[in-house]
Length: 96
Figure 1: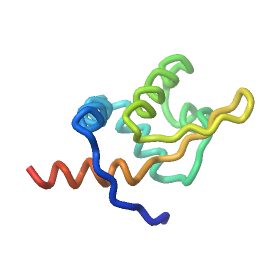
Figure 2: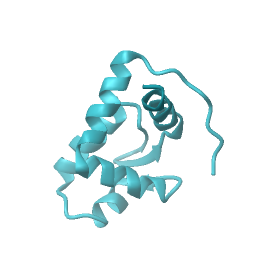
Figure 3: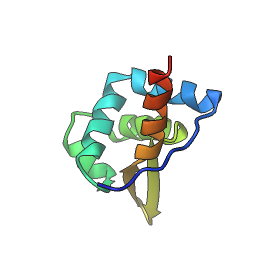
Figure 4: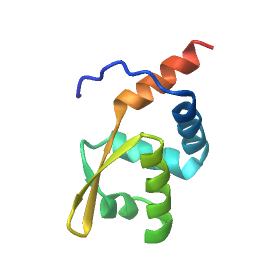
């Protein structure tokens, strides 16, 4: 497992992460990404009944929240879970 670093979240990013994780489908997508180092959009879509445009919307929300990182290669996109952001979010929740 990759080493994570401590990063602070702004209030805005904290709200974006909370909103992104509030959707059960996005949470399911993060679970899938957590099982792999890097995965293509098609691999995610093959694990759940979801249309390409809907998946694209969910991935954009996760990317805007800083929970995933997209690496574009031509028409293909590969995603990585940003564990640093997730760790910072959980730490901030734990401090409540």
